[in-house]
Length: 471
Image 1 (tube, rainbow, N blue to C red):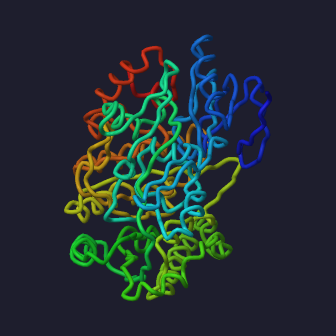
Image 2: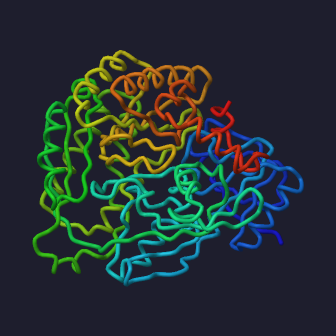
Image 3: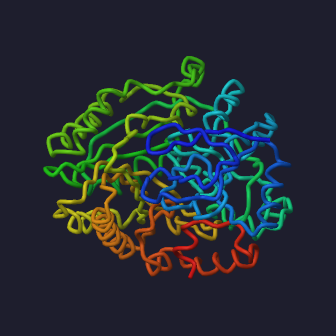
């Protein structure tokens, strides 16, 4: 059977068939175009099993892809088969009483939200954007705005894994438990996640509180006014990047349980993306000049002030608010970096970070969002070795070798600063970090690679991230 599916390539929608020979595929960062042997997709478990069996027969490598927002080749391998799981996206079962849902790995968080919202249920952990697949999110062990539920692994009850030998394994904390901490945050290197059972929680109504503060007040503010206040359930902050206030101003957004939960019904309609023309316009200007950077920051602050005191449901907090960041440019791209630093190191860390990058004229930092993630080391490749602030950075750069080299140098310097302050960095992005930096940030990385060799000695599941760092 010929299966036709879609791939976003350089901003365009292209149709591929499973038999298409040697397609060139890119991930979201567009810095690693890779010629694959083929791209295959199916909504059938049996057909997915057959793809793995055929790969074993012909000694083909398999890379697993969802929405492909990882930017370091985690879904790519030259000459390999890309297994696109987006069609494998059924919701299988909802256990309303026990607040559990079982879904196939290609389902998106948006599809789950639409399904559970009428039942008064909500996700525990997901990114603020809901476009990603569940399998992809598990593979990078995401975190989000919730400050009481931290990394996604905490909400995973169990999953079924199609391993390199073509066998289906039940994986949980009690069954095949070694794989549980490897597949969560395992970047698709241990097999195909078939279906997953996740813990849900009740939807609830929040009141939004926003405030502008200085960066050196943030740790104290967060500890006293957020972490120690049980009614505060979600939080995010942003720190300024315009030259006249570089890494000094912040605004914070807290989501506290509303006093009158009977009003929840007025806010449960799932929101769509709000008007994006104005922020998209100023973000575009911020890519090119300092005035635009300042106007974009002011636009963000003004929006924060406008929503102060408003109400929103939990499900709507956990929905996309970043469509305005979509970006297509023939010679430039936008990459993400994310650094984690202990709460008590934050102020000193920002001071050192500012000194490190303030004079980098060719480094175009557009935005920094700050979130919180509590300590959780259940995943072998855990980034949360302490209670951390997570700084998500959006960087505009060229696609030329010179631009890649410049961005890489600055990023390695920023990672050194992060490590100096007992921090870590997130792995789903371009392979700018050195192997030495990886080992320091992830002290169990050698164990991770050894387990890869144990469970997949023929390297059936492969990607560029593994090739870059495992030797």
